[in-house]
Image 1 (spheres, helix red, strand yellow):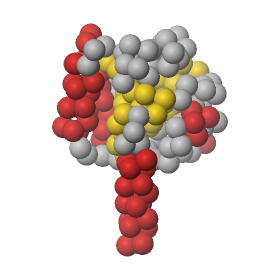
Image 2: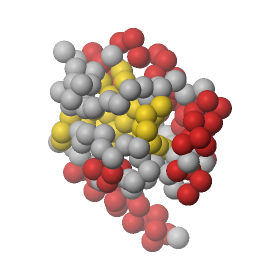
Image 3: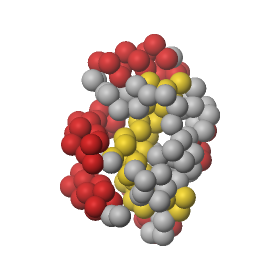
Amino acid sequence: MHNAIRSLAAAVVTFAAASAHAAPAPEFAGIDNWINSAPLSMQQLRGKVVLVDFWTYDCINCQHVLPYVKGWHDKYKDQGLVVVGVHTPEYGFERNLNNLKTAVQRNAITFPVAQDNRYVTWTAYNNQFWPAFYLVDKKGEVVYTHFGEGDYAQTEATIRKLLAQR
């Protein structure tokens, strides 16, 4: 158990160090369906701050962060924040579009949700965690990441900072 925790911590530290320099945000690729939106691209979102939230509806940690994600969407959408929930299923039943639509409705999610059943966008981001946040600045570069629960104040402060940039 301790080795697994150390390995996870080392992976997070390694990724954080690697992402200290901005990198272009990968496109939304291999998306099976879009809920609450027409298909989106990073190119068309240029000039906006984008929170890419990798989640899956049956993950308890994802359920714990959802009120924060919804709150940021509601609070900052009129200031230029676009939240995109990339739903990447852990279990087979989460791949079912009707199940996903039911979960989106049950959780009153109003921001765009991309169904990434084949893990194409997940892989493009080199993601390994649920939940995972990737903040993309107005130039289209990933400038902040956070994995798991917590650090909500830091994430929100980064959103505000990015929205304030020209």
